[in-house]
Length: 347
Image (tube, rainbow, N blue to C red; front, side):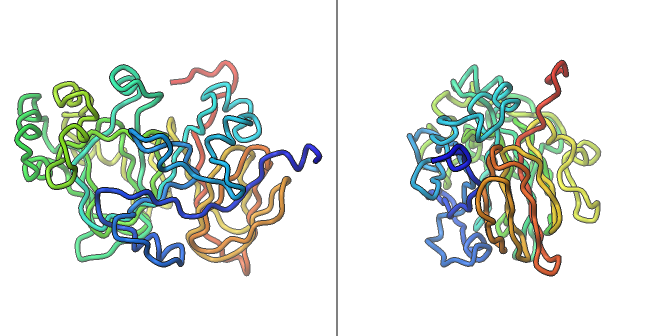
């Protein structure tokens, strides 16, 4: 076998939908053109090298030959990620992509920052995320994010200890959403996704959620605070007020022509592309929203693309060139954050 044959290649990924506590999954099945597995498979973890919290391997993506993506990356980090990426992030892909279909309203929750995750949860990173709305159903598709007013520590603790879900949800900004809108969710920001909202989610590669509203969603409070107790867990919560001007730094409406707000730049990238575009060499996850075409790389056979196709592209594949049939191809390219040039400060 020659060197070109040994290098990792771009390849399509099958659905990877671990069971979850909340309902959903029909929109994912329709998007991929597959039958519904059951009504508690609301998340498709795409190109996942991240395991579900508290498990050894649930949620990890498996490549065509049966190798876990996480193992493949550890075995050839330079081939999968490139030298500059490895110098900054080590063997981590620095990205997890999901398709998420909220078949019911999700509970109010937040995610820890990098510092909190390392200090209190012995984790490599926290979880900032972003949602790109792919579709909605129902009369009032909406999400919630950030407290409207400052919330003091005692009040937050009372809401959580008494499981006053109505107070928690009622204190958040309610945001109507449409297909094409996007919202960045920084670590610490309390949030929830409403029933009928189907999103493409980009996030840091962790599965750390502090579930403030756990009653009627999770089995135990232990699951909600990840074993550290709510007194410690609530230190991760952003209790500050988010008015409309502040929220505008996170929200992108479809008519703007942009995908993600600048708040995402330190964590991940997303570009909407069509036939004729090229994705520069590097680890990438391609999600096809519509049309059909082909993905061409320097290393491997051309791959057919159609709505619902998801492809992982390693650095060793070289530039990923998109060609669409009759020019009709609509793709989101999801990538880790840009690696700074030598000498550039990393924030």
